[in-house]
Length: 97
Image (cartoon, rainbow, N blue to C red):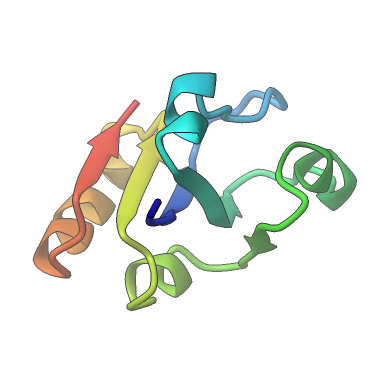
């Protein structure tokens, strides 16, 4: 029986290119269920790649969600690294990419 692992993505980068999970991660049961983008990325772009993900307006909607198994923080500046500490304090496995 596969267990789906829920990922929350916090994207701080300035690029309009969306973060993408590798096919290996998807095969291993990971799915992006919540996404926060600091910069204005059209919801249609996000929904195209992650049709089942909820777009949130605040990073803490990801960190505070008990259903999120892992947090990915993408392209943080040095000023934004505090969110990594907050995710770790919330006992979320956290990856910075």
